[in-house]
Amino acid sequence: MFDKSRQQQGAADMASKAKQGKQWSLKDFEIGKPLGRGKFGSVYLAREKESKYIVAIKVLQKSQLLKAGVEHQLRREIEIQSHLRNRHILRMYGYFYDAKRIYLILEYSPGGELFKRLTQKGRFSERTSARYITDLAMALDYCHSKHVIHRDIKPENLLLGAYSEIKIADFGWSVHAPTSRRNTLCGTLDYLPPEMVEGRDHDEKVDVWSLGILLYEFLYGFPPFEAEGHSATYRRISRVDLRFPSKPTVSHEAKDLIRRLLVKDPSKRMALQDIPSHPWVVANTKKV
Ligand code: ATP
Ligand code: MG
Image (cartoon, rainbow, N blue to C red; front, side):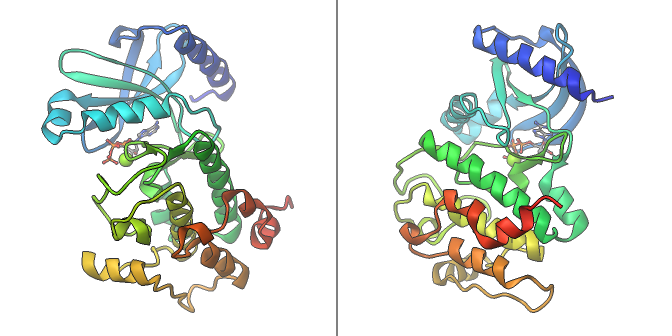
């Protein structure tokens, strides 16, 4: 069983070992069931033998990383994620490697992927959405205060903790701000802001945009600028062709917040710190 109080003690032990610069190796862990697969390897449930602390270990094949030319990206992911400390950011305790693989020691998120939950439920209630969006806004604000931009906020990169709290994972596309046009476009365009699809310079305001996309998707069950093919999506994003279908019913206040996040001019997008005091958020995060 997943024991929450033991986990808390174990987390403290892991953190102090990480702080002391412990050199981890595969011998320190018992490896359990696979939790998921990523592009470059797999993630397994694991337990640190000494503290019995449950973690997730992401195993990456060096050969695949080299073939794809993403070693620098992985280095950045480790560098950034291991320095962030926030309840809503998946903790990275450390890493180690052998001849063939690189292993990342991650906080285990027992609730699994938010994407899966959203697919199962179709969409989230306004209360659930407001909770997630506020927690994400605060976590991203924390990242930005450390000059880190995530750039890849989407349901696939969000996990749920033991208390159903949202966790930002996967810092593979994050960068230290400010940044220029290079090395961006890959995968789905749906979450990218106009300045990125148009190949202009961008700053931390890109994460505010993706929060708007996410909020829309939480409430409607699909992202706002979906279209057949890259170029049609590109045009809809670039024009901010935002439409609110009549079904499902979504409150005016929620739509107001979405409109304040999905603003073409990055400098005019709402500040993350102002999200918790938006009337819709206030009304939907009140304790009942
Ligand atoms: P991609 O780049 O294709 O998204 P990736 O290599 O970044 O893949 P992740 O997305 O980090 O891999 O992990 C793959 C899957 O493993 C996740 O979608 C999730 O289901 C599961 N997973 C990853 N990390 C954890 C964790 N800490 N706790 C629980 N499950 C996890
Ligand atoms: Mg991923």
